[in-house]
Image 1 (cartoon, rainbow, N blue to C red):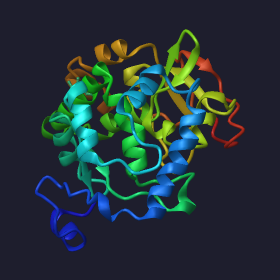
Image 2 (cartoon, protein in one colour; image 1 turned 180 degrees about the vertical axis):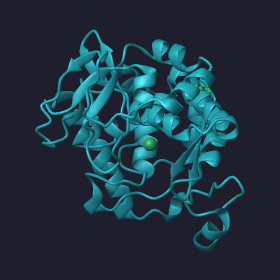
Image 3 (spheres, rainbow, N blue to C red; image 1 turned 90 degrees about the vertical axis):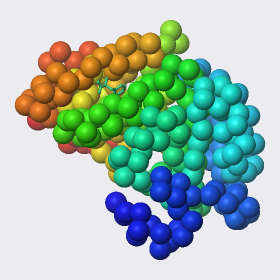
Length: 289
Ligand code: PHE
Ligand code: FE
């Protein structure tokens, strides 16, 4: 992770809090076209797959399909809903900086957009992932509170506990790759899924991955992969339940986590509430031995 001085070389206008001006007028026609391709594709395939909270949030934001959004204007709209704003950053920022932004209800978004040849997978979050993927859920009051609580929890985990790895897994399996059980079936709320053309189908329809009922300690013990589709997803019952579980004091939990085992993705353990047992056909060998 580059520090502020290193980033200054490529971003002379970077601020102490790692934000940079979006410079919206610098996006090229080709870059806006990448946004449009992704936006139109996802808008078509997400109804019936993403949860209604995401789809409602997306509708409320009123994003134009054909151009990268201006973050200031988007923030003015979002702020009226839940008090959140979106700020531009060069790419991934240090954990402490990320937590401080979330705790202040500011969502840091990558300024760049992926190249046309990266439509299907990028590891580094770009503005399509960060804005299309994350911001609609920030319109939902309870999820907006969850994200801020996560930021405050991160500050505390850094200052008092050595538990960033556990906390990062919670973020990964909820904010990024979460599924929710609804009366119409499983739906997506995770930003990493909704912003991915292929994974937004795979996550809810493929027989390959495991889908397991969310259990906080279990999730915080489970490794994840960042380079390909997930082998397992965790399914929450409701956003109320997620918030109720996670706003408890984690001190005792962190102490337990430090001692116990770590699970691999694709591993099923006793006590799991398995909703769909994956075939693991997408990645043979990812079943636990
Ligand atoms: N409850 C956590 C703590 O005590 C903070 C937290 C809230 C973490 C919500 C993640 C999500 O530190
Ligand atoms: Fe993300």
